[in-house]
Structure formats: structure tokens, C-alpha cells
Image 1 (cartoon, rainbow, N blue to C red):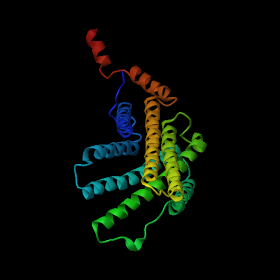
Image 2: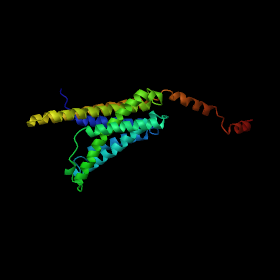
Image 3: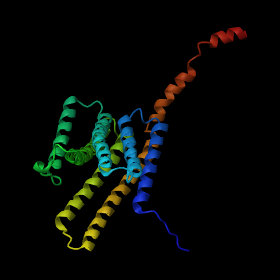
Image 4: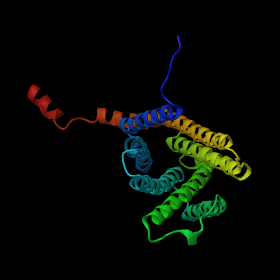
Length: 276
């Protein structure tokens, strides 16, 4: 008997990614992690919304309107992701000196700015139609692409700092902050590597026939699917570690519970006197 699955790899990966994000949101809500990581939770909600928009709106709206929605969500995601990196760094290096904060932030942003400037092609500014809707969408898309690269570079740098120096502050091994930073850095490294490979392919491979062109585009699709697999693995990583409590969390909760149990009720003496 031969089994015939009508689902493509893209559909399977979309379903797994969407399901994993829903499970992660349940974990964040059920384990009360939202209060500590509100921006991280917001980024997951926004990514889930983008997945829903991709499947619900594609083919049901005019192309220009659809692109405007997707590009606007991408620009918003860049801003939220930058705030997530700041949130992780705040929890990881809480108590660090202001001078250290400033030096680290400026260094990461400068490194990210240089790499963004050298990474990928830039459009010919004279050819952009600034007064048209298409020109504005192109500018917004450029900001989303370059901003996403900047976020990835800053994320990798922040994750490296958290792994190396987080134990000196409040982001030691097995803490939620370090696990979030490792997941973010892994996803960022994977996407930067895929972009680098694609740029090399675009510069070195020049298809001459339709078959060669389809082969190159097929390689691009495989790279995108590989990035989705890495992100699903990152989601599973977050689900597992954010479900578990940090080391010492039970010990911190025990004294409070004992104190509540040993604190006499205000009405306890009155009840005892009435019984006597």
C-alpha cells in the first residue's frame, strides 16, 4: 500500500511552526513568564500574526494591499525584535555599570551598522519613485530587510556576551534569560548564514537555461525551508526550558509559603475564645 501525502514541505513546516508558537504562548501564559518577558512574548504573538496573515490573506487581496500589510508587519517586527534584544540584555546584565552598558550598546550597534552597510546590494536611490505608493513600499521593504540584518547581528553579539559573561550577573546557565538569548542567537546565525550562501550563489551562478534557473530557485527554497526547521527547533528549545523553573526558584518560593502557613489568622484568637 502506498501512502500519498498531499501536503508540501512548505505547508508542513508552516503547520509545525504555527503549532509550536501556540504551545510556546501557552507555556508563557501558564508558567507566568509573560510578566518577566513581555516584549519577548509580544514578538512571538507578532510572528504568529504574520503567519496567519500569510495563510489567510494570500490570494484574497490585491497584490499592492497585501504587500503593504506584509511589509508593515515586517517593519513593526524589526522594532519589536530590537526591543526584545534590549529586554534580554537588561535581564542578563542587571546591575552592570552605566558606562559598561553604553560601551557595549554602542559597540554592538556600530558593528551591526558596518555589516549592514556592507551586506547585500543597495538600490539606486535616484531610481526610486518617492512620491508613489510603490516607491514608499520599496523604501519600507528596504528598511525591513536592512533592519532585520541589524537585529540579527546585534542579537548574535548579545547572545555571545550573555553566554560568556552572563554568569557574573543574573544570566547563568539554565536561567531563562540565557536560554532565550541562545535561541535568538541560533535563529539569527542560521538566517545570516543562509543569506550569505544565497549571496554567493547569486554572484557566482548565472543560469543560462530555464532548467538551470529552476535549479537555482529550488536551492533557494531549500535554504528557506532549512531556516524554518532551525526556527522550529528553537521554538521547541524555548518551550522546554521556559516550562522548567530556574534553579533555586523552588527554594525562593518555599520561605514565602512557610511564612504564609505560619502566620496566624486575625480571627484565630476570636474563634478560639468563642469555642472556650
